[in-house]
Length: 232
Image (cartoon, rainbow, N blue to C red; front, side, top):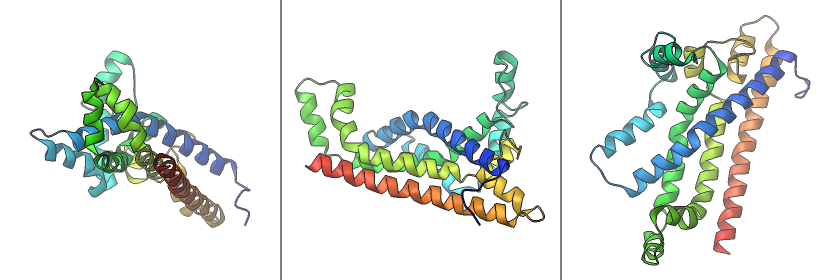
């Protein structure tokens, strides 16, 4: 079995998975860093509730998340109806909805990784920069951000791998439409239901494992490189 001898369905699923995961990551990255900083550096009423809400996708069944997204963003949903009525935007049963579902499921991993990295930064360094006249934004971009880059990289690649493997929320929110929402996990699910689909299913399985392992390996190597650079 040749791993690289992919059929058109498999190639389309791979392309769509990378596309969806890329957009999901781009959408959650700025918000993930902001929320991580707020949780790491600020104390306010309801902080535990916010923390719990952010981490809900890690403990709830993905199908529940997908159903909630359908209620909120579906054509007749609370927010989705307004988007369609006034802006003509519909995300349910489209690749955009798949990106939203993947982003929601990956968001906690990104936030947790970045938050742990921010908490590891010595606040004395930040305070010293403030005493020299640097404002909050300048302190963040010139002091905090360079120090947490390894954590951001780890969070990005973990979130990307999670997005790539998302199944339950995606199939519930945007269904399994070939060429539109059928990502690698959904294509794999489809193939194992088809007669003589075992070879294609195995190729997609091995491909998914390969991509996930490469993401984790790159994350580890980049984190070590940035840590060595900062300490050097």
